Image (cartoon, rainbow, N blue to C red; front, side, top):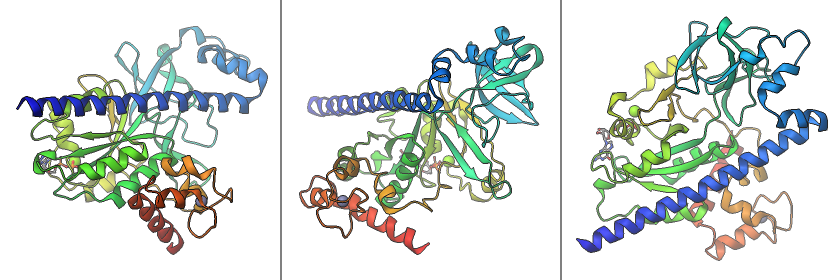
Amino acid sequence: MAQRTWTRKKRDKRQREDIERHEERRERRRASLMEQSVSQLGLEEAEEFSDTAIARSRKVKDGQRSQSEDLVPGRVIHFRRSLFEVQLEDGSLIQARSRSTTRSPHPDSTLVAVGDRVLVDPAQALIAEVQPRENRISRASKIHDEIEQVIVSNVDQLLVVASVCDPYLKPGVLDRYLLAAEAYHISSIIVLNKVDLDPAGEWQEIAKIYRAAGYPVLECSAESRAGLELLRDTLTNRVSVLSGQSGVGKSSLLNALDPELELPVGEIMQGARKGRHTTTHSRLIAFRFGGWVADTPGIKEFRLWGMDEAEVAALYPEFRVHAGECHFHNCSHTHEPDCAVKQAVEDGIVSMLRYRNYLQVLEQLRGN
Ligand SMILES: Nc1nc2c(ncn2[C@@H]2O[C@H](COP(=O)(O)OP(=O)(O)O)[C@@H](O)[C@H]2O)c(=O)[nH]1
Ligand SMILES: [Mg+2]
Ligand SMILES: [Zn+2]
């Protein structure tokens, strides 16, 4: 018994360390994204950009400076009947509209989206300004092809949930979610649920492969409550999107962490939900313990169409490490000579399973 407790502690510690490393990477990426935006703006604007958003809003267009002192920052969590629900920093909620005067740094995209950080003019119940989005999940609109429709923005992390059995874990499916997250610049965490159903721990092998690829892996059970404390810490004070096949236990995990959510369990969401999500807005659901989960259909909508092979390969973090050493800079790591990625697979540094899945993704792309 003591031995088992010790092993569990060791495992929890390793999972925590994974998360911490993941946090550091996320911070670095955020900083580099900020730098990129600044360098695209040019020097004068860059100085302004580095200033506070409120200072920026004062400068935009003459005559619009009057009330900027009274603007308060918040986050859009819901959209209903032409009104945005904005949560202010003190936790209170206010309803506000957008107008043609609402300032936004994203001209070709949904003006105000769920997840946006905004500056609100409470006196007029108006969203005065949208702040730059760190990332976003969007869908290509069929009607207005030129306008990007943002489903949710500023997502801190994607949790890809899979179950160790019932249904069995499918690495191919897991990879599709991970690829989409990479393409959207959202960092992902893998959650292996239902570990209570496989006490022998056969999933450990898969967990090892994904950890080696650079993804944190949490081992959980909504049933036995194993790993739930760490899962809750991971979700606290962040905006998360949960993805994963139906039946893996996404709703059960959320209910286990926050029973007030009362999400329906064991429901195949298909029909009704699909219909509902032809509208593009989602909703952020607040956890009792702080943080939000986005009520979106996840990122299944995402298509890799239009990407070339090297671009797809760049979505595999463990390939990226080696790709710089390939002979061709746009190496697809399939047929080319002097390919460092293929070499790494041969040497057992990069997982054969991930590499095979990559080849399958390429095949599907060519087939489309
Ligand atoms: N044994 C076991 N069953 C679970 C666990 N989590 C969820 N389930 C069951 O799996 C089924 C699907 O769960 P649900 O939360 O609806 O999955 P979702 O479709 O991903 O939201 C339900 O019958 C749950 O009771 C778990 O950790 N262990
Ligand atoms: Mg569900
Ligand atoms: Zn290569």
